[in-house]
Length: 116
Image 1 (cartoon, rainbow, N blue to C red):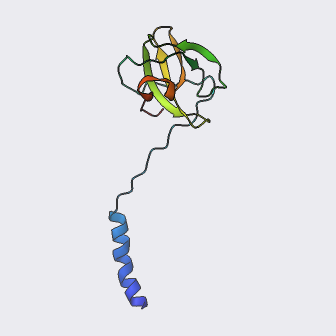
Image 2 (cartoon, rainbow, N blue to C red):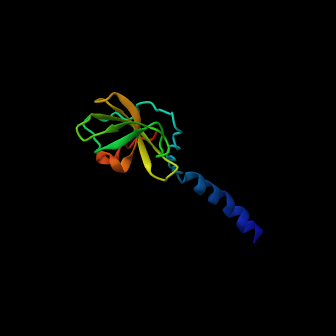
């Protein structure tokens, strides 16, 4: 019996090495109040929100720096997952020149698809 296991073991090890391992990229962590991010999302302008607070971090506990409206031009930079479990996009509002975080369910197209 031990000989069979010894003979099979190298074959099992080689098979395990041949299987590709796919590691998923974890979502970017919560952005503390006062935290920004670099522009990783190359999407075009044309995104909008309808009266959403532009916050200093990815939390409703962070101060609002302004409000994004449906006629404002927003440039998405990247997203993170807030402590509330929602995804938040860091963006530049070209209309009021504010850089801030908005929860993705308040943004057109669901916000950025690029993690921070």
